[in-house]
Length: 307
Image (cartoon, rainbow, N blue to C red):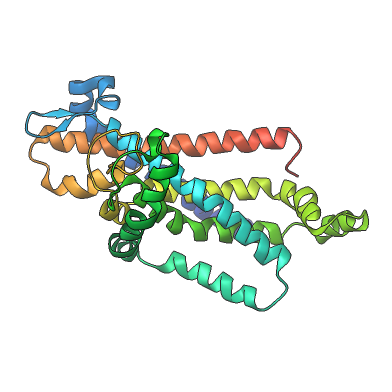
């Protein structure tokens, strides 16, 4: 019997296909499990589950609006704070600084990613929360109190505290990914811009950032994914009150934190099913965010900003 010279290639291809199939199979399995367990809640509450603000296990009335609102608002606060700081730090490390000190900064940024979320939560309770109550929230209330976002009494366990904690937690992701993307931009683009008389800032703005937009957006989306799904730290500092409030000083709740707080204590089958539906919403929200990000990247590419 002759040896098949293509046998090794076929084995390799089969193994590669199996490995590649693991990801969609796992994703489908998670989605189907959540959908199956959510059926009683979906049938009982219908689309109103998404817009109802009541969460009362005693009367078996459930609504996810406060958790959706808290998840989106806290993540938005985190992005507003973390994106400028992270991108600015990445530009400094890759384009501005030429000293060895930048390596220490890069190391400290990476260390932020290694800190456990429960430690961030403790720091938020005992350091960040009191600091915001004593200094930041009174200042914002005094000078920007005419805006609903900054109205109400200062509170340490609040939406603002949760958003700031998330910003610190996603900062390493934005900084590290953006730095790596900026470093792979060809030096010929920088040299061409400088040869034409561009300043350092003009070189970064015109020659470096446009080719890196796609990767930077990808890093921001990765960070947003962590912010949306973060559980322990945000649970410890956001206040865990299921209500929709325009003020950032008020407590809030997120999809992930309500699951962490109440899943183990679900008092009835309907309560348990509602928790599974919360998990399903969180999964779908993540899919929608990533889908919108992909569309954004396609639009940027269509305008010729991405190589």
